[in-house]
Length: 432
Image (cartoon, rainbow, N blue to C red; front, side, top):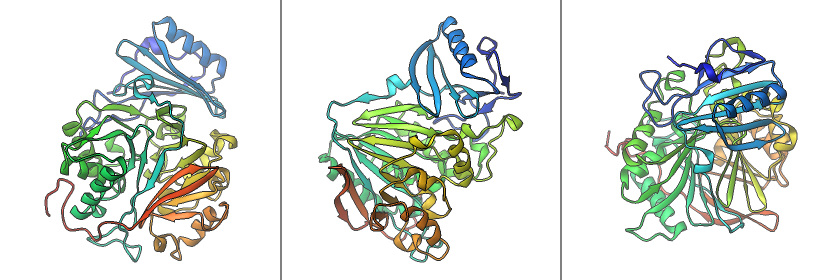
């Protein structure tokens, strides 16, 4: 049972009757709540004055501000006292405060690091194998996404990782060789991964991490993971999320964890990630213990990335329920980006969000065919109609590398995908 310390009580507004469990990080939560779960108190009908008074109260209790950020959407800070870490934020448009005890995260100060070089990072949309008929079969899938960012210090940030059906032995070896090549890391030296970000806990967004770490256990140094998964019981059945956590515990026991929340800003070398939405933003006072949206894809974290002179909006599998909420809570000026990752493999409309992002370029985590089927064409046009040119969109059936240069999103690499239909090897590397 989640508990809340009485001395942390929020004075003012209308505190919700029950605590919401934001979930653990890499602890196994398949059997219910764990000691690493993050309880959240929701307070509605409050204001900035009461929020400020609450922060003063926490400081009076011995908490120290280790991070704060003031945006047009939220006013937020991270507070630390001994082993207790609280993340508190005020959502301006709603007059709501959320207080989260992060029991498994390190502080943002400890998680982030900077690099003096300010040039653009390299961004790779890594090629995956998609079903040629945009369907599902025992050896193919029509979704999945995998992105790789090479930082100025030659470390990597990995985003998601595709479905296990896109991770045959041939495909995984191709990923491994690609990572060695773009970092110029010799055999026998570890490939340094500054962080692995998972947009949400669906099985088509994490397989590459599991397969790479288990296939090449001595070849990677994974320093950080960042995500915001709700408790496993919110969406039981996606066992891959449990295997991911098991893999991280086994192969990266000292990894730094950060549960992402709205208002956070994470700096990794020459890249900054700003969190615009996380799953607890959807919690309402009417049923404060339960994630209310019908579609689990709406637990996808939304990140805005800045590197060099460009910005990328990472949407994961954002769906229409999230769209309605974030357009009320995040002002228009924060959405504008140069590049957008097309949400949910182009399976759903975001007719209002894409114009708000107003990107000149787009990356679609699906094949060309998958984006242009009869059922998806109109959804894709919501993206294309916003681009500077209809040719400014790239598909993930092949690998494409980019860098921001001279105000443009320049292609720096194009090559064919490695791997095809699945070969029957599961996430543990065992032939089924």
